[in-house]
Image 1 (cartoon, helix red, strand yellow):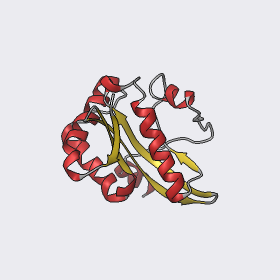
Image 2 (cartoon, one colour):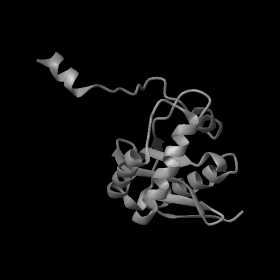
Image 3 (cartoon, helix red, strand yellow):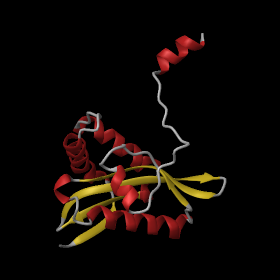
Amino acid sequence: MILSIRRIRKKDLDKLAEIFTDVYAKFDVGERWTKKTAYPMLQYWIKKQPDLCFLVEYDRRIVGAFCTCVKPWWDGNHLSDAEFFIHPDYQKKRVGTELLKFVLGYAIKKYHVVSFDAFTFRGKYPLKWYEKIGFEEIKEWAMISCNPVEVLKRLE
């Protein structure tokens, strides 16, 4: 196995959008991504903080990516939010672990990050993997969402 990690380039986005779509289709967490919708989401990350967008290659084949950003916080810099995905055929081969180690090491060295805060899906995948490697679920936090049109109606 030859594993390599590098920054994402614009020409990689098509392949990464395809992988992202495959991951969400396989694990059926309720989000219906397509290549057409995944592509602009990945572009967003590259524009937001390009130096924290990395892909991983396994035997010279792109198999996943990790994009995140730094957010100043009361106790220091935090990695805030992320898109982290590995093609299903390459999971359980330490590919994701190595990519995560690389990105965390880079962020600690360059930005002196003290925390990584993100949302993930409950249940066996992927929360259990994160817990296994040392992440903790914050019981006091809740992810919230709304339909802006409905909220505006209620506020009038």
